[in-house]
Every structure is written in structure tokens, then in C-alpha cells.
Image (cartoon, rainbow, N blue to C red; front, side, top):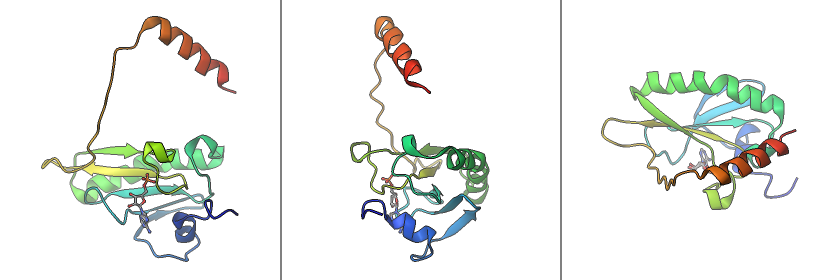
Length: 141
Ligand code: AMP
């Protein structure tokens, strides 16, 4: 295993480093983020190592999808937050720091604390939309 693949989350999953665990099953571990953006900020992590979401195996993907809503509900119930963001970064340029797939559940509070988002949107142009949609659809297998 390369050094990059042996991440801090792999060590947590193996029990070599501590965490504040909130959920565990055969394929998934969830624990509190050690530098939370807001109270209750939780990370949901597949136990099988994959650096980024696009290379995560189907069983782990399904397992994460099955528990994300349940863990989100528990975070909301425990914190009293009424809204939250699920954030999933892939690649250093996209703010990924730990190269083991993880989903952030970040509660948003009435005082405004939570994830700040920069959203530099522009209007979709039809000719470009037709091309890129067809291209993406053609790459699915
Ligand atoms: P990302 O930028 O999406 O890769 O986020 C990585 C997250 O992992 C950050 O929010 C860190 O605070 C968090 N983190 C790093 N080390 C630990 C750790 N030992 N326990 C819990 N969370 C951690």
C-alpha cells in the first residue's frame, strides 16, 4: 500500500487511531470531524480504501447511500439543527485533504454557523448543454 493510500482514516478504521464513533457496520464507519465546521459535524467513511468517489466500489457506494440519510437524521435530532449540507470533496484542487473517500454531514444552525458556500453559477447554454450531456451519457458504462 502506498503512503498516500495509507491515510489517517485507514488508521482510524483499523483502530490504530482513536475517533468519536457514531455509527459502524461491515462497510461503513462514521465519526466526528476533529476540526468541525459546526457542532455535530460528522464524517461517513467507507471501510474499503478508495482515494476518491469515482473509484469507490459499488458495494461500498451502496452501503454509504443506505446509511447517509439515517446518520443525517440522527445528527439533526442530536444537535437540534434544522438544515445541513452533505459535502464530498475529490482531489486537492477541490479541497480534499484526506485521500480516503468521506462524506461530511455539516449541520447548519440558525445563527448562520455551518458550511459557507461559494457558488459561481452561470446560465447553461443550450448548444454546450446538448454536447456535454451527450458526452457524459456516452461515457457511462
Ligand atoms: P476533506 O478536506 O474533505 O479531505 O476533509 C478532511 C476532514 O478530515 C477535515 O474536515 C478534517 O478536519 C478531518 N480530519 C482529519 N483528521 C481527522 C481525525 N484524526 N479525526 C477526525 N477527523 C479528521
